Each structure stands twice: as structure tokens, then as C-alpha cells.
Image 1 (cartoon, chains in turn brown, green, cyan):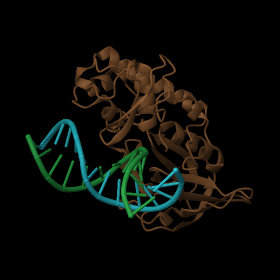
Image 2 (cartoon, chains in turn green, cyan, purple):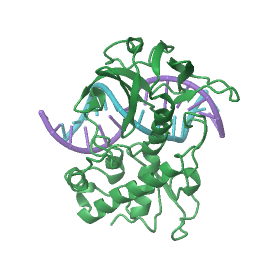
Image 3 (cartoon, helix red, strand yellow):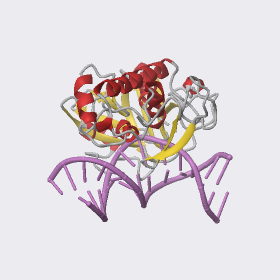
Length: 278
DNA sequence: ATTTTTGTTCGGGC
DNA sequence: CGCCCGAACAAAAA
């Protein structure tokens, strides 16, 4: 499932392979692939040259040689793929891009099994697409402020697990890295943010930064083929997971068996010994 | 056939 | 009105 490290891996792959290319043709192949708030059909960007690929949290956007951008969210299973000869064709292609640079021609596919992902033509507003306006900065953003973020967590009355998943406060963390960050910080997922000390909240944020930074170096986490990078490669961070998906397996720190509970409708994995309610 | 999975949005309740 | 919670959405694998 694409969270910040996976989306960043995709962004880096795209950045390397599409910047400088011109978008010659776009086909929308599924009725839900275009976000309803898109300024226009995606084909309106035909003729534009891609000048960069940017990201905030789990949101991606292609910068073009015109005021509009092509914004994208991978949802649960979205993928940008270059169709390679030695790989089976993608099965859930929702949009198709014909791009070229001089004599070089490429086909970029937007593939999405569960159709929660989307594409959208948008204006930039304060450096980010309009649909990204309400999304908090992610901790890798140069403008990210840790002290402000700590305060924003502290004044809410949310379970810390729910707070980490709230993209409006700090973006990029999903279910996997939320569980891993809380395990590293030794914080129980159900503790209220308003009950945590400033120091503890800081530790949770630092842990999220550390675990996502390490995951980026490993190309992200791939449990199955729902997450692969633009070249179809899996990430290798799964072997480093201490808590997520480790139900009934020993905690790497103390040996207690990892527990699974539901918090805010999402599965939460934690060590009952290392991560106490208080 | 039913359950499980997850990011985001939306509606209800307080 | 603001805040928080839970349901809904899709689709496929187990």
C-alpha cells in the first residue's frame, strides 16, 4: 500500500524517466480515473512538456510547461508503470500516456486494481495543487516545522494512531509506518495525543521520520504486487518490519508476542510490553 | 460465500 | 460550528 516511502520511490523513478518528455496523447480508460474536481479531461494536457515530478505526503504531481499540473493519488493500489517487454501486461490499466522526447517514445500506464487512485488537472495554489491544499506538510518537506506539528497534535483529542493517519496534521504516514513509528517510540496506539508529553510526541515524529527514511532507502514495502515501482520492482522494507503484520510473532526488542487490535477501524499491531497505555 | 485489506471522503452525533 | 468517529467505497485474495 503506497505510503510516503512508496510514493517517493515512484516519484524518483518518474522523475528520472519522464522529465523532459512531451505528453502526446492521453487516454482515460476507466470512468473513475479522473477526480471529479479536475479542471478538464486529462487529455487537455496533451502537448505539454513535463518539467518535474513533485510530492507532498502521498500526493504526486507532474509539473508542466504551463500553469496547470497533473496531480495524482495512488490510493491503495495505484501504479505508474513503464510497460516492459519482459513483464506481463498490467491488468488494470486506467489511463495511458504516450510520451516522447525527440525520437524517443515511451508509454506510461496508470494501473489501479482497486480504483481508489485518481488523476486530476489542477492549478497550483501556493506551490501545491488545489487538492493538496488541506494536506499537512510531510516531515521531509524543507518547510516542515516539528514544533508546530507537535502543538497541532497536542491540541487534538485523537488516539495517537488515528492522529498519525490524519493527513491534515502531518502527511505521508499510513497504517504500516504508523505502527512502526509507535513501536519505535514505545507508545500505545490508543493513547490520546492530548495525554502525551511534548517529548513523547516529538519522539513519535522522529520515529516516523526515521522509519520512513529507512524505508525509502529500501525502495518501500511490498507485500504483494499491489505496490511496485515504475519499473515493476518490489521494495525490500518488509523484512525490517517490527510490528506491522507481525501478530503473534515475538517483539524484536523484548520477545513478547505482538498484538493486533482495531483502532479507528484500522488494524493496529503493537507490543503489549514495550508499548503501555501510560 | 464471507472476511479482510486500506486512504480518503462524507455524514451523523454531540 | 468544530471536532471526532465510523461507515462507505472497490475489488480480489484467502
